[in-house]
Length: 284
Ligand code: DGL
Image 1 (tube, protein in one colour):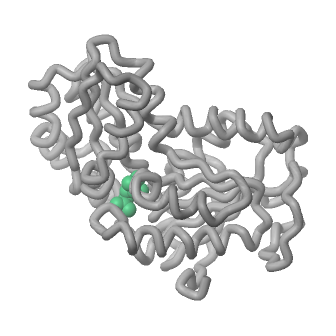
Image 2 (cartoon, helix red, strand yellow):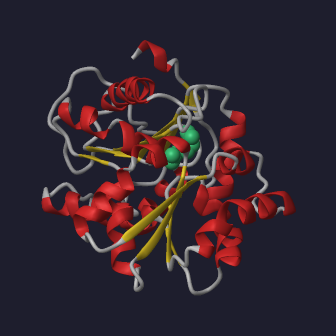
């Protein structure tokens, strides 16, 4: 078994190097799922900060510090690129992360904004996300850069993350809370809704049912994976050969107990994830 090992001595990453993906917890797995779908030959090192989730109610300084630690950890695997598969990190920490890094790093907000601008027909876009992402106005900024004539309506939905983490994906409680959050967006007549938190695609059917068929739900993961493929292709870093049998192509790390994460991961990525390792991320 040729497991990718942490390595402090950096050389230039090559095509066979893994991609680093991280999130505050399990939500980023919805982005991993999309990456696997679109570029199946790639190796992935995933880190979920399960000890410190949620990020969505923390300060910019804290989220940036956590993100910097995780990037340092991922870089020990000689990753060729990093995906911040967390809207809160993308809203709060991208500038700081980009400043300090010499490999490409992608967030999920820009790709989500782009998809929404192409999808809207009536120029009314809703964004649902954590308090941090909504408060940062980051979607408004990127959408307005693409099209000044679009109106954006943000709504923080802080109860969705714990509901998803509890596995209440199809449940009357989730349904009721979603109705309360979404009523004002329905009244405003949006025709496009960005799922601006990596957990939300997991309750997509509930959200879709409540918003109705007329509203397009945008999952930024799709466009993020597409952009990642484009970026790797442009730099001649796309892995063309499938990793061999037993090459341990997906590795998962967490900052707290691994068992719940593994159960959750298996329900999202149907690849038989057998284990995740616990890492003391504070030491990075
Ligand atoms: N992954 C986070 C996001 O996409 C949601 C969970 C959290 O608050 O940490 O914003």
